[in-house]
Image 1 (tube, rainbow, N blue to C red):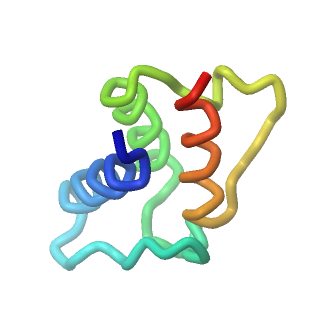
Image 2 (cartoon, rainbow, N blue to C red):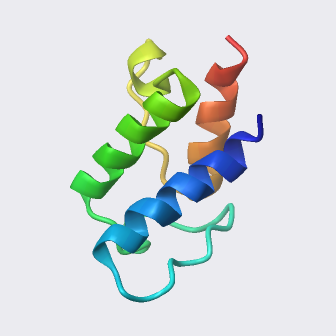
Image 3 (spheres, rainbow, N blue to C red):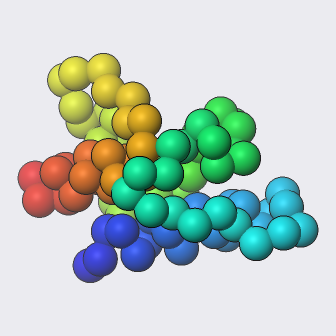
Length: 83
């Protein structure tokens, strides 16, 4: 499964629920806080990814981690996809 593609797909679905304009480009260096999604939308994103992927790296991790950029977010999910 392509984790990046699934995250992008779910992000775009959530974006479309609250916006009438196209979603921002999700590049590795895209700052998550600058995407236009609020904290509630990110919580929904993580919950839906848990449903779609079958895991939540934020609850599996022993460390508190807040990815700043999209590439870091994807890498965090990829790290736990193999466990």
